Image (cartoon, rainbow, N blue to C red; front, side, top):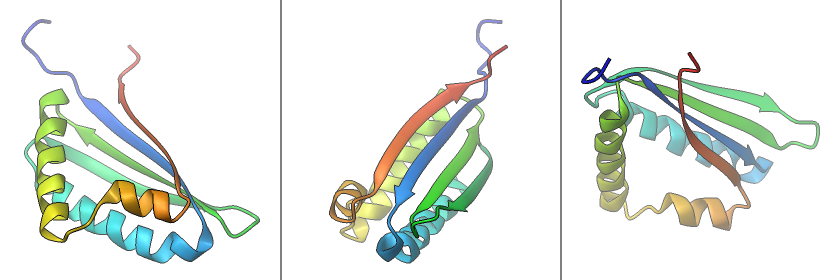
Length: 108
């Protein structure tokens, strides 16, 4: 099926220490508001599991119509963060957050 884009899924997992949780979740929620407005967006979820030590595992899931849509969304988020003088990488490093960022495709 050449020429037809297949859906892609951005699945990001974060191990977030308790002191950073509220600000991190606020930032993730704001980012997802931007994502929902982008061409090729299909659906998203932000889920959380509290771990026994007060740390949270936050997982974000976004379905896109194809890989090209992700590139446009990344540009839109970078532009919004630049306008806020916010660096996600710096925030993650400063707060001891462990991130696993990946793009997936349907298995079959």
